[in-house]
Length: 188
Image (cartoon, rainbow, N blue to C red; front, side, top):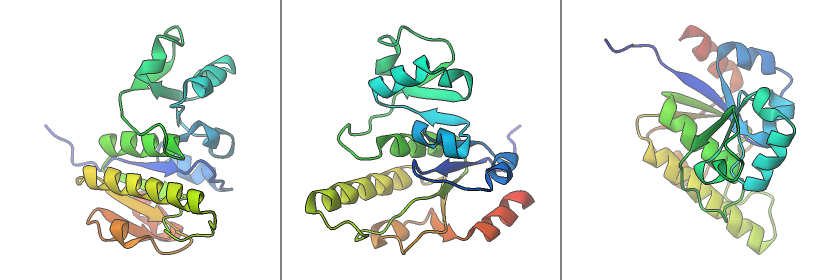
């Protein structure tokens, strides 16, 4: 028999920091880049890059959370215990790749992905042409992930500005504030 229970998780951007992490952890699992572990006590940390994964294993992060890396890294890391693997193809040249992998992994596992700390503004404060181009590529990767998981609802919380139209027009994309999201999640 299939469950009617709605499964949700938190997805934190690598630079996100919150004083209310306990409330989030009480409600659901927190996913994100390994860079979010210190500030968010992330339950599931992504380290797509081999050198990052090696460094984190040496520091024992795999004993403090569910540490994930690409399956191509597993043998080179000598098949360590407590390391989860995935096979997701995210362009190695994209910025914030760990955030993108986290988004794809959560979208494949949960009905609702609550995204914290993201900025989906195309223009933003970036003035360098190359950085602006890289940010646009990153935003298009987010769009493709959201579009690729039409049965998953993505809720972006407290965006600092409006999301680009390419993303905000997707039917499984919404924005809200943290008070409304907390109330909704507590009611599930």
